[in-house]
Amino acid sequence: MFINKEFRNVSKLQALDVMAKGIAHEFNNIFAIIDGKIQILMRENKGREKLLDELRFIRKFVRNGAEIVHRMNKFANRREDCDHGITMDLGEEIKNAIDLTRSEWDEGAKRKGVVYTINSKSVMDALHIKGNPSELREALINIIHNAIDAMPAGGTVSFSTKEENGRVVLEISDTGTGMDEDTQLRIFDPFFTTRDKGTGLGMSVVFGIVKRHGGKIEVQSQKGKGSTFTISLPAAKEPMYILASAPEQCKAGSEKEGRKNRILIVDDEEAIGNVLDEFLSEEGYKVVFINNGAAALELLKKDEFDLVLCDLGMPDVSGWDILNVIDTMVKKPKVGIITGFLNTSAVFPGRELQSDFVINKPFELEDVLRSVNNTLKD
Ligand SMILES: Nc1ncnc2c1ncn2[C@@H]1O[C@H](COP(=O)(O)OP(=O)(O)O)[C@@H](O)[C@H]1O
Ligand SMILES: [Mg+2]
Image (cartoon, rainbow, N blue to C red; front, side, top):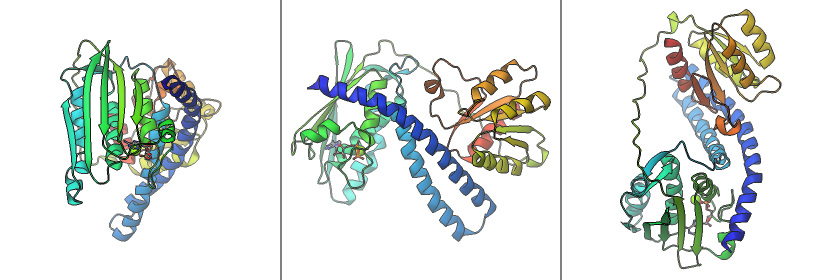
């Protein structure tokens, strides 16, 4: 039973991988354009509160769309190994996920007169795994959301962990509605949902994250009798501590007028280039926008730029080709990448990014500005 399900899920994943990446890339561009234009309109209409409210409203839905694409991409972007991950204490991450969802099972529920109990007494200390803590947390949060959804009249979510044959095993049970056999078979399918307002992306994202961490996930359930998810992950031996450096403080205040830096924007998507051009010009930079990689290379031969802001996926001459050429230049401009691929190294295996910063589409114009300012400052 388990082998069949596993096989079905893995081969399906491979096909969906390709599709999800393609769709995500296209939609990222579309959302980036709409979002960029909204942000420009908002800046140009400061003080017109009624209009700004409408724009904020539209933006919220653009962001929702972008979030769905982001999750699709996350599901598709599955690297089997998490070698470059960090060692973390699973118990800590469980605690974090429980804390992060507190408003749903604690305060929010109380207001509705519903009581949830979260039981984590059987979570052991110091069980280490290697990977990406925020991804793992996201997986746990998705499972908690589903458990709460499955217990509209209240109930208990229980966590327990153990170490078994070099693997860390986590069980999460709820006392909710449970699932029939058909739902259990399809639970990890992207877009499979039985809820009116569901997206069906929660458990497919969980599946992708668990796989990426070298793990397995199983579900056991019976209609009316609750559900149990069992996740097994490779145990990591030595904890490794990484000191995160504090993010660089962004200088407040605008020094727009003094800006003389020249920026070359290269993006085959004209509307995105125009949004960036308009915005950075408005911020005082000298901007040239070109929608074609080959023409950009010609321009780089003749002209000097302080920064090249470049898309990656372009026909004929790609962003990578441009990066390679810049790498051979004597007077190298700084390079910023603005891409619709969530994880560039996964899309172009084995290629190291040689850039000063990377920004994912759709982007906050303020983030672009901060990166550009910081890069050109030194
Ligand atoms: N703990 C659970 N109890 C009962 N059903 C669940 C549980 N978790 C997931 N499911 C079922 O799996 C479906 C897919 O879940 P998910 O991928 O998170 O999407 P969504 O929550 O948007 O519906 C749900 O619609 C529900 O039918
Ligand atoms: Mg869900």
